[in-house]
Length: 241
View 1 (cartoon, rainbow, N blue to C red):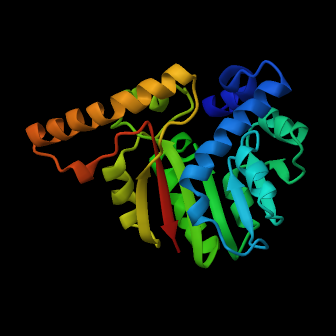
View 2 (cartoon, helix red, strand yellow; view 1 turned 180 degrees about the horizontal axis):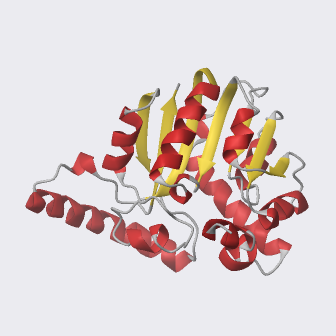
View 3 (tube, rainbow, N blue to C red; view 1 turned 60 degrees about the horizontal axis):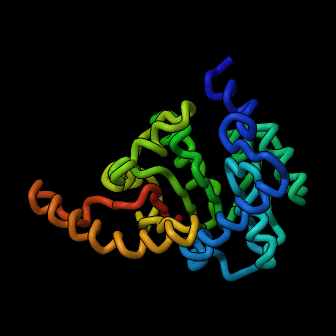
């Protein structure tokens, strides 16, 4: 068995570690806050748009999209546990499938999303997947990805904290990857941290400006442009076909 599938078979148990369905619902609420701050502006205006979420997990993005009136939704994931949980949370548009098979069944898709997925692919798999996505998207269609950022102060925590991760990226490597593909208007954006206790949010507000100054000074000292990197633990990539 592929080592990744070994973990995917137990992904909710080994990675998400929800104690109850209520735990999952609370996590969806936290995810929703992050989605509202990051991807809302990139969504299709047409609520009938075809949307495919590759690696949908327990369905946080699809639930959020459904609340906003999008109906033409499909989610796929390799983990039966994750799909079962998504269905328990109320989704009937999710299925167990690998992304290459799923993409072979699609065409003229308006929006494809891959939240915390590309890091699970090898370099060759990532190139193949993104090349196929470019072919499946409708003209003017959008691809949205979220992935860990190894340039963050504690970037290794997310990037190396999952044994199924194969690809470790920063802003520079993302732009290099997409420069070889049929996408246009590629943006690599920070993903602000949300949630946590009141104390965590307060400290975040106090320390963020200080950390920003320290980051700028490090870039100057190393002779690296501040535009070459992102400081948040996750990055968002928005690419147009």
